[in-house]
Length: 116
Image (cartoon, rainbow, N blue to C red; front, side):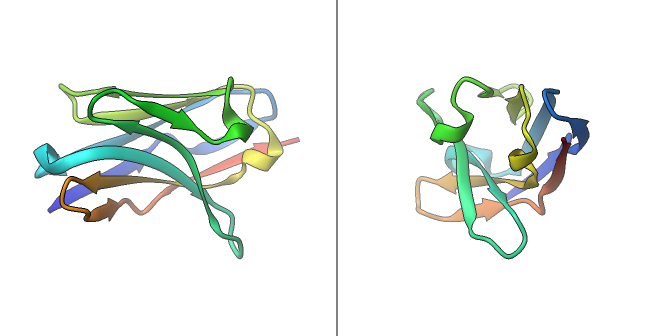
C-alpha cells in the first residue's frame, strides 16, 4: 500500500504562484511514477504533469513553461511549482502514484483557486 497526501493549495491572484507538495508513505519502493491531476467539479480529470522514477517528466500543453514538477527522494515528496497562475487553473489538484504492478494510489486533493 502507498499513501499520498497533498498540501499547498489555496487562494492566489492571477499571475501569482503556489507550490503543491505530495508526500508518499508506505511501500514507496513500488512507485513507478507520480502524476498531478486536476479536476473541476462536474468536469473530467486532467493530467497536469508526471514524473517517473527514472526522471522523465511531461506536462499538459496548457501548463508548459509555467508549471514544474520535481521530487525529493529523501523526503518522498513530489512538488508542483505553479507560476503565472490563471483563473482557468482553478481546480482540485490530486497526486497519484502509479506502481510497477499497475496499481494506483491517490490523495484526497488540495483546492487551488486563482482569482482574476
